[in-house]
Length: 93
Image (cartoon, rainbow, N blue to C red; front, side, top):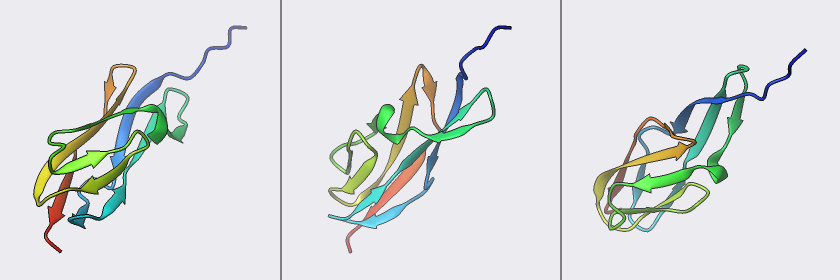
């Protein structure tokens, strides 16, 4: 009998469309879906990407902070698998 490790199949970022006031933060979660049917929080082991770090910065564990007003895209990736896009909106207050 051969035992194989579960393989990452997809990544889902939630919340998908968060809104926050400038200066505030939202915790983004990257949920990894594996070939064995399991679902695991992999937020601290993905690479987070913000389309504009002048508007939103994202820490290594997925904490998104609003720097100035605007709407940007945030994605997570691991092992060449890219997540859905979270559209993050930052408001003035």
